[in-house]
Length: 640
Ligand code: M6R
Image (spheres, rainbow, N blue to C red):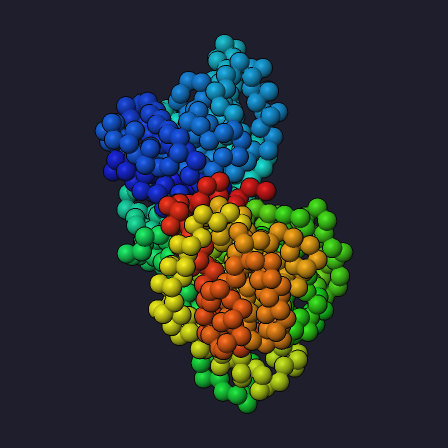
């Protein structure tokens, strides 16, 4: 987690760094800080809490310094207090470091440095880095003096880059760092080891950041560092090296999306705006992957995911690894892959899988799903899968696929094949439009496989394709007509303490997702449950104080869900139905109906999730909470 930024050029760094941190606040917002160099000194300013606290402190300092680094923190080691905020300095105050990630061997390093006289003032793992750099410089100086005394030949001075590269080789863990030193006022050194770091190229000015939104208002020419790479940024340019000191030739690329996407565009919160972007992003997926000319009866597949045929040709089993909302999307993916393409599919929490992996079977396809492409648990589980496949045939090693919204992210670099979910950047911590586009990716994958394996009839395929094409208009209609009602309804639940969400079949994961949305942004306890399982225990929780949201879409489990809802009603629960407005039955059972469009049951998750996103949003907004940056969370969870 955490966001880091850096700037070197001709303008005052502070304002540029603050603006960059604002765009990275989604990565963490417990505390923030900046360090700049002017007149041979480092000035470091830090503040607990949101960025505006830091901004207020900086308003008192008018610094023209044209070089600096900044950080916004999601606490891992040490409380979110000012003394733990980055940047961290060495004891001389001449070296400043910001880090995103965790230095796993920091305890050993700290002990070693303490024994050498270094004094620590924070509880963080990061603080060992400036001290280690200072220690290396001290060693170089000492060796030089000894050589002089012996009147031997003068040893070559180590450069700032060489010292930092010695230091990164001593760090274990996943990290990205940016370092400045008052003795090298024209250099920022950055390094990446399993945490994202991207460099931006301007005219006579260069930037670095954990993610591209921090750069796009300055430049769209960017270069992502790979694991095990360092770079030196000066006002003259950027040089990239490997951790082993080899100079690397790398070319920047041009980012394809516009800075407008990272603005709220009139909405009060990014989450609200992102809910409203869902028709457009579903359309973008249809345009990207569906043959617009395809008609029922055409022998070729209507879907083109740009994947090689041999990736899935004789796949007998699929394992999906993901976390959070991506895990919920994967559960729907499992339903689709099994029911449409007839392929047994297992979905695992990436954070659990690493410690209890399923036996690897021949003809297994592993899919990693992560919107950010940077979730450490997912990357670690996929990394383990890659290692388990080493030594097998090339074909088997290539049987791995990533589904991500960030094609420049770590998963995209790691996986031999990737499906881009085309949702555009998502800033709200609660995933909304990226979830819906992950579902689209699974619809396309499952339908394409079903077509290849002839497990779907032409008529059924045509029916689903027609339904998919209608989705954007259906979502638009729902948002236009129902939002006000959802908002009004939300007023009744601002003081509620517990919620239950029920679904069955393909809508069970939507119950989980509805509960997660409510928990993470409104801090109301919520449980998602398979409707049929309530009677096996959780029904004991119900009384008049616990509202129950039941997703009841016409299809295979409709009547069953209505019965389960009746069972809840008989225990005095207030019932909210997510169901098409059809007849008297629903009106009689439910106290409130969130009327969703009547679509094919198989496609219904795309429409049933939207009222649940809106309900969570309006309850949280009504409670006056920080919807886009809920407490204790971060958008991109880059620690395991
Ligand atoms: O970037 P990822 O999809 O890998 O993120 C996984 C989870 O951290 C994420 O879905 C999280 O649960 C969201 N806050 C849900 O809204």
